[in-house]
Image (tube, rainbow, N blue to C red; front, side, top):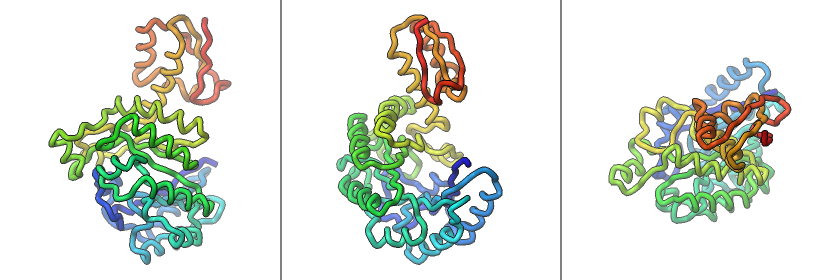
Length: 325
């Protein structure tokens, strides 16, 4: 069966901080609080789609920081839907400083299987400048505690935050890898109206990343995680009309993940000197190799590469076989 999430957004509830980049109503496109019935209805709707197995995923805020009674209401409704067959478990997203043994005991008892921490950076200067309200040590402590309970651990990092640099982002990736998460999400920073970053941008104190800046950096980050056996399950924010309407600046593109994969493939080809080549590629990866509007293909031609593209399912997805012709 294919895997999917039944996403329940809990917008900006309980979060003890207003981080520099945060406008949760814009990010999630939601403003009202979900109820237990909303959870059950979302699951019922998802199960009508055959051939999928799911995790119920609570995203959009700091789930373990919301009112305990309300959190238990949502968790109980979700746990009642977990059958171990079509609905495998529950995924929650929260802050590193909102995790302790008491909270993990509750999550374990309510069939939570995966916990994602919004680490964002492992540089204390960057965390402080962006009003995160926690330290890199808090991330490490929470991650180790989560793993000790047997939960699947996910870590989220951001690139292009205020006072961040490519070098600091590389160091953040190294420190996250040391924590041995199961999954990672990488979110380039998007500057939204009504945020502290928007104020800094207006004052020309903060220069956000462009899509090209972020893609170039993520092309370096992606293989770091993959070579460590850590799956990157998301590159860039999900497509959203709300984000497009409220975006001031930053690295947002609806197909950001494919842009990064495309650059990654281009770099594989550029590792060879210009000349005549046959490149064997999986059918699912042809568009990534050639690039958006065939930009990679045209660029390679301009650089002196004469390439014959052979499409075959004998090559694994996202891999290339490059042979000098």
